Length: 123
Image (tube, rainbow, N blue to C red; front, side, top):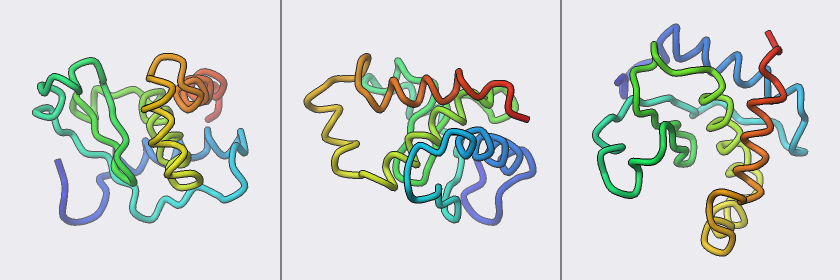
C-alpha cells in the first residue's frame, strides 16, 4: 500500500485504462476527476463482517481492494471507478440509494457492472 508519494506504475496503468473504458460510455455530464483517485490494498478491511462479501470498495476518491494490485482485474477497477464517478456527480443520491434500494439491484451497482462488462474490449 502506497499512501505517500505518487501512484505506482501499475496503479496508474489500471486507472488510465479504467478511465478510458468509462470515457467511452459518457455516463455523466461532468468528466471523471482523477486528481485524487487512488487504489489502496487494504486486506484487513475485508476481514470485517460488512466488507467480507466485497473484492473492492469505493470510498470517495479511494478504491479499496482486497487483493494485491498485481492480482486485481481491470474489470474490478473499472467497476469501482464508475462508483467514484457516480459519487462525484450525485454524492447524496448515490449513498442514500443503498439505504432505500439495497445492494444487489441498486441502479448504481447495475450501472457499474454494465460499465465493466460493456467496455472489456476498450484498449
